[in-house]
Image (cartoon, rainbow, N blue to C red; front, side):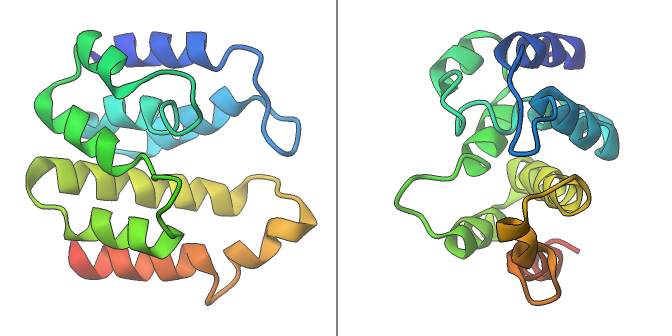
Length: 144
């Protein structure tokens, strides 16, 4: 899939949606996509779409995801019964292009989550020893 196609899909899926701070959710996707390498941009634009319930893996595959993009997006879609750190460990253990893409996108995603406005009850995730710090250490430890 071309990056521009992924961006258009993301714009359509996230039109009018806002995050917990009442900011456009699309801006988060845009910042994440700008932080990653060219080969990871398609996945960055779409990284939350399936988990947010806005589309399906099948629909995105039909829209033109490559095998590596599909597999990376699958890795980035946390399952309801999966703990956050188990989800992160799965990404960290993944091999080849899909694992590298998913790791790069997840690191950029968490970095953005740590810098955008956040409600008080979610601040602990950002602190040293919080879930984003733990995730970064796991991801960077596996994919250097």
